[in-house]
Image (cartoon, rainbow, N blue to C red; front, side, top):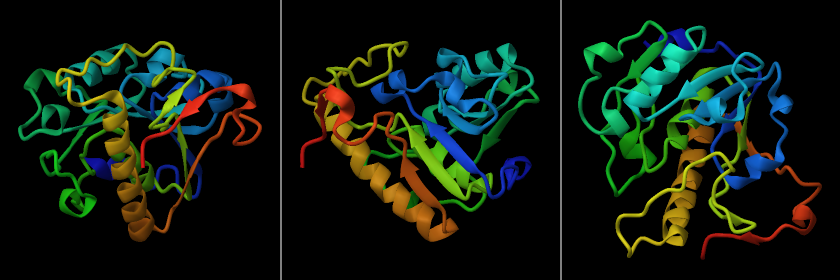
Amino acid sequence: MLNRMRRIAAGSDVYVLGSGATLDHVDPRFFDGKWVVATNSIADRIGIYGTANVVTHSHYHWEAHALAVKYPDNVFVCPNGHQGFAGEPKVDDRLPNIIFYPHQPTVYDFHPDRAWRKDGLIVGSTSLHGSMHLACIMGAATVMMVGADCGILDGKTNEGTHPLTEVPDPTRTPEAILARWEGHLRLVKRKLVDEYGVRIYSLNPFLNPNLEGHSWQGTPR
C-alpha cells in the first residue's frame, strides 16, 4: 500500500512536523504549497489542511480514522497495529484515504536496524520516526524537521494546542523521556541518511541559535 506514496515528492524539500514548542513560532502560512508530513493531529491543530500538500502519519487508529473522515481529500498513513504494537487494523478503519503499513512491533529497547522493513516504516518510541521515514519514501531530497525539539522552550515541551502528556510512571520524568526521544531520533537520522542519502535538518524559527531572548532547556547529557 505504501507504493502509492513512493516518490510523490521526488526531489523536493519535505517538512516533517512534530509538536514541539518551537512550532508556536512558525506562522502556519509558511507551509502554504509545501510538501508536509504531519505527525498525528498537528496539521489539524495548526490548520494547514487545504493550504499545504499534507500527508499525515499517525500511530493512532482512532485518530487517523477521525481525521480521514474530516479531510477526505487527504491521505493518512498509520501502522497495522494501533500505536505500533502487533495487530491488524480494524475493518471499520479501512477508509480509502487511510494507508496501513506493516512494521516490526514497537519495543522499549528500540533500534532502527531492528525496526527496519523494506515494505513498511520504522516504528519506535515516537510517531516522528515513521514520519521521517515516510518523507524519505516520498522522495524527499531534504527532510526539514519542524517541532522536533526534545527540550523545553519557555517552560513548554509542546506547541500551544497540544494536550499535556500524562506520565503514568513517576520515575519517567519529562526530561528523561525527552532525552530518550532525542537519542532515538539521532539513530533514525543516521539510518535514513545511510539508506536514502537524504539531507536531514531542523528548522530554527529564530534569527539564530541565541533564540531571541527565549529560554531553552535541552536534554541532559
